[in-house]
Image (tube, rainbow, N blue to C red; front, top):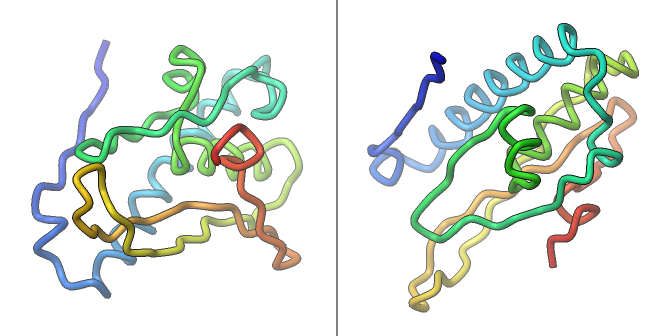
Length: 139
């Protein structure tokens, strides 16, 4: 099986304004992969009916997962769940303008050191924002 992996070691060295642009492009790539999956696997359950839960990742890791990987793991974090929901809204419900909403915050990691974190939610065409991570168990 060919399953590309992508590492961006330079992310902490890139100026903040570029980070958001980079994240949007990476999120778009995951959404496109999920759209293609949903178009060719019509039996895929809807996110909220799939049994998948929000599962946080350790501070030192952020693995992005597509729909089949998230289903296999039975969980994912914000970009995994958000990109699934966006793809689902586009394919199943025709909401072509549904897109990622990125929020930023400085939060302490497990050692107490402040780090910049990003949280992915879903912005609907009517401007409403939903958070599948919260719906699926994030505290």
